[in-house]
Length: 312
Image (cartoon, rainbow, N blue to C red; front, side):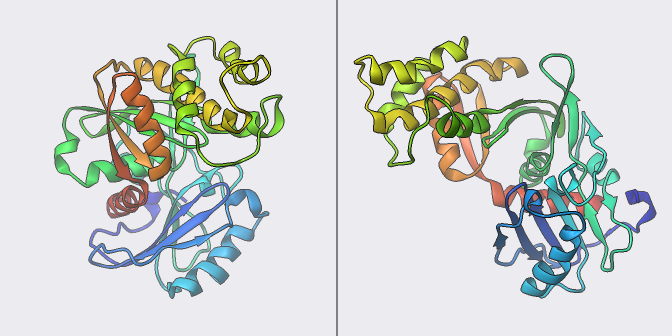
């Protein structure tokens, strides 16, 4: 049922916050004062659950573990996708905390109540649609953490399996672009002629990959150099292929994507997400003359869920 049929939480109260992804879920109890307790992390993403199982998982696993049996719950991420608990319609760009709150989907027959954040839809690079679920909550959270961010234009990047580059203007998400960099890396290193074993990170090979990425064009041609440098007597060792590919793929993304959103060096880009992955992106951005700042993804998602639920 739409949010309009459920009373607004117009004053601070404790609730259960969940970031429910494809492979994992994280949950926290947020107190009336807005403080989050320790995170519960489980390998029970929506891709690992069958029909009806998300409700059971929340009721029988998450709530008891966090002693949250009587708290309303708000969920972001893939729980609202075609793979998840229930498919929730996307909200359209431009969007802010209020429009996402207006699109909250309150699941029927749940007591205590459970709401899912809708995700966002916008115009893609080819004129068709682009979509996201989960990252929009982090953007809203980053904005909510500092009121000064509600003014002006900002460019944010969420590294991950499907990296999101987001343009924000005066507190609203106006456009975003998705790059399947993480998924390409996984496929290439596991199932292609470039497949390689996991091993220690090689910073020199990563830097070589950044150089090989060039201006980000002709990626399919540049990728083969990872093999040619090894078997053709080049300067890349087999154990460095994984790091080289990481640098090449991230470098190609960083070299070509910001311009799609109107950003050119020395633009400042805000990185939100896993610290280790954000560090790799920050290195690539410095290589291409872009400035960056890194913010914690967990803090952003919690701040976003709080901001959305209080407006819903």
